Image (cartoon, rainbow over all chains, first blue to last red):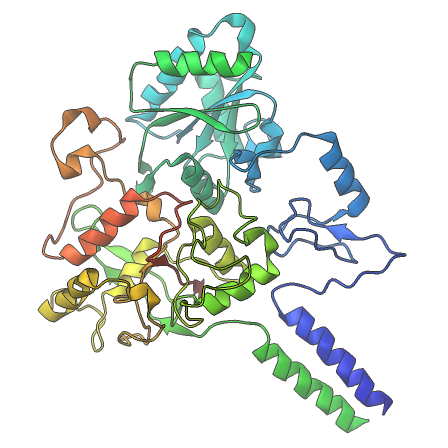
Length: 238
Length: 256
């Protein structure tokens, strides 16, 4: 009879395991783990592991709570809701949320681009030039590569040096193919690889608040950037 | 003791196959073809993969939101799904009485479709993969030149509210896949690679420098108006849009 009981328990356990999520029985004496992004809301786990949704490491509950208390909540429309990881030209791995706190001016480019990207970079430089020096330290100019395969952190570093942008005010990001696709979708930037070295892409410069909310988008190349600049200054001074 | 052991194995196999909530897939043999859009005479190579036989249903999606509370109607973040997300549902975990469990899920954003597929160990198809499978009619893998193939699709575009119909209500194509045409439009992973700038619709010069590179659109077969509509639609939507006639299905890579 004991065997039957054993089989019953086994099958319940198997059921729980083979569904998309793992079971969530609670035990008071153990530390509970939870996804730091709360992919599954308040769901907890008894053992360490990775979130089945976003694949991030689960955090012990107490630690996770501390983190949330320590920082301001981000809003529903913030780009900091994205949970993919990025490599910077400095060789760090970050989440977009790590860019929190500064006004962000973001553009998507690729370093081997011969046509529009140099002009987009020039547009970024023009914007930067017209912003009062005192405000620059509160702004981060972010360049996201749409060609993560070619644009390694080393390539991005070289590109930064070449363009005199190798400092704390400029960040260059390499993502994963799906992470870049997701990010472009948040910015409504369209792009398509048309050959191994070439992409078509829309030319959009986006301004985000220090909380990651979209403030303004400038479309096109060499367009009048007055509105963009005033929006950036307005956002920094808020 | 041996019988108990065997019984355990049997049970684990049984639950293993029934409880992992995977929908039926068929194998698609890869190949080369020229899509409607792309650079002229540029062949696209498709690798072998598996595709869901049917679009994801209301019932399957309901199970997903029950397990993933952050994707419930009231919890989904605006950046990932606009206000039309699951707009016809009665509540977070209940359909409207007029919605069939076996009808395809619609009013879902690209973000949630992507995550749904990833949760199943799958992914969204690329535009090229989707179009490759959708070229088929009942009998042949590429029916794009056939008049009745195009007429069927265009006829569907004129039919109202086909998203209320149940999955499997259209034809089974050459690969064994149902409902690519005739039920709902479907999300693709790289739908935002369709670049439609001003000059593709008219010759207004002010939009011409919106895009890097030369115009990506270049119809290789304008006769294929049905496909043109699909590309134009993809070019006009954003990833957080939840549209009432737009659903999705998943695909999976074939390993090794």
